[in-house]
Image 1 (tube, each protein chain N blue to C red):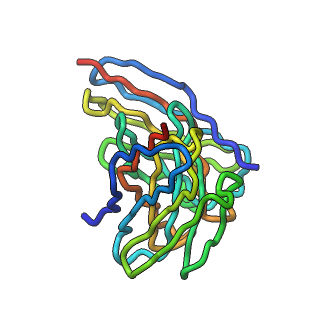
Image 2: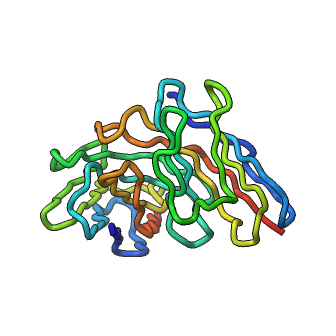
Amino acid sequence: KQEVTQIPAALSVPEGENLVLNCSFTDSAIYNLQWFRQDPGKGLTSLLLIQSSQREQTSGRLNASLDKSSGRSTLYIAASQPGDSATYLCAGEGDTDKLIFGTGTRLQVFP
Amino acid sequence: EPEVTQTPSHQVTQMGQEVILRCVPISNHLYFYWYRQILGQKVEFLVSFYNNEISEKSEIFDDQFSVERPDGSNFTLKIRSTKLEDSAMYFCASSARRRGGQPQHFGDGTRLSIL
């Protein structure tokens, strides 16, 4: 059974720092790994999707990597801004197409 | 950019009542999903739906739950007799393809409060 864990649970940093958010999964048989952003009381915004055949994806200041053999994905945020403050969720899609979510990392970027 | 739309944004219902949560997926998508998030907990999968059939359902999705695509645009989740523990944020999602590098797109959710 797939389990997804995210570390750290919370992170508070000054504006401008580069960040790494970690996601680990127990079953390496995943097809896609998707990163989301969730603002308080809001829905999930898809940030990046990495297919199992890929090692990384980039979108603007965001870069996500995937290492299936070690069961890990990282989300790198460059030059963080206060507007990046949100909860970041990773989710793995396995043999069936349901997403298994981690508990999230709550990020606060202060000016 | 096309988006998934959910209504209502907030639903308050007495325990034992029926509720219907509505979703309009992205128009060219074929795969539809419901997830829920109890306050402070992980987002959990409920059900997936393709070609007018349930593809997969979780243990949470018992006989009290049902899904329907009544027309070409709407996708609904019905809870027949609500319980206090059904209080959660319910998210609808849609995708163009399975396992084909297409992300699942989520709506803003319906907050369901059972009194």
